Amino acid sequence: MAVKEKYEFSDKIAGLKPSAVREILKSTSDPEVISLAAGNPAPDAFPVESISKIAGDIFREDPISALQYGITEGYAPLRDELKTYLKNKYSMGADSDELIVTSGATQIMELLTKVLCNEGDCVVCEDPSFIGSLNCFRSYGVKLCGVHMESDGLDVEELEKMLSSNCRKVKFIYTIPNFQNPTGYTMSLEKRKQLYELASKYDIIILEDNPYGDLRVSGEDLPTIKSFDTEGRVVYAGTFSKLIAPGIRVGYVLGPAALVSKMTVGKQTEDVHTAMFNQMLVYRWMKENDINEHIRRMKSIYREKLNVMCDALDEYCPKLEYVKPEGGMFVWCRLPDGINMIDFCKTAAAHKVAVVPGTAFLPDETASTQYIRLNFSTPTNEDMVKGIKILGELLS
Image (cartoon, rainbow, N blue to C red; front, side, top):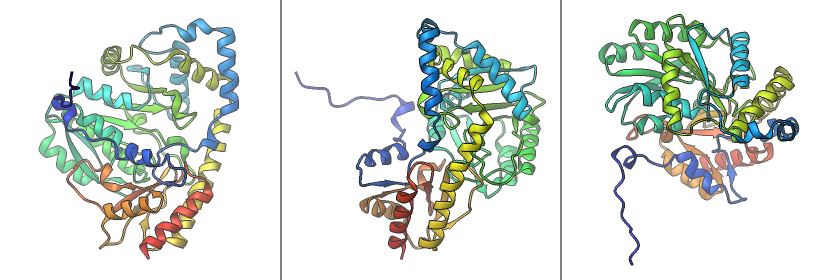
């Protein structure tokens, strides 16, 4: 019997393209390739010893809870600990808010889209923005309305023009205010307040994604947009992927109880609940460790790696334009006019250096850009300098 070769896919999935970042990472299995393309946290920052100890303690003391089903909302001790942590650190969490634990932060983007959007609705996002979230939104048949990014955050004048002409179809605004992926830009305090005021004026939800907030290496911490929320219109997405490790897949959403309750129902149809062992691991880690000391150690690691990348760019790639970020994991570099960005990425790959083409992050998949994204958290310092030197030679 012949093997079936042609399949008819659903309208929602047929047009989706593989993540450019994930496809590039496949090539990095070659040990000779220097990857400046990853989006992974610095391995040196993982609290391996404490996690190893806690894992052993859990299986000695409470193995059945770790291996059994849990409730969809999440492990109760972890939820309570997170509510206290967010209130103390960020002044977030009104009486009308609720928190549930998710399987990573990307699930939050998916759940909010599921409960708010019909096909043809609009999600406003930064342009460029995180490819994982963009593909999530696309999978629900929504229209992506991109707002140009400036070095201090999205262009609020452009945002208001968009909202004033199209607000009936806009279901929420998606933003990464701290060390944005891919640009590394941080939204100013003024723009955070303006964004909230515009959302209030046009009665629109804000989805605030803050995966990199703990990775600030210079400048002053800024309040979250959620901390301004007096009307129940900000949904806050948090994660332990950068604070502890991405492999544990533990995130959390804090938002208006009515929205989060419906997201909980949506989660029940996906994975029932986030892995109990992972939630117990995170809870005990929070209770048994000095989180502030861990963050200080992380910042030291990231500060050094960012400086190594920027020093190398200044020395070997003077033709690349960039704004040095105050934290996060990425540097957004503009190639000189006259250089084809896609061809440059392919040439770099042929020379065993992987970078991400900027087009991967554009809401409009037909648009073009001169930018590439470089990651400084994953490669060793030696590989980083070597890779950037090769890029400089290709630009000379």
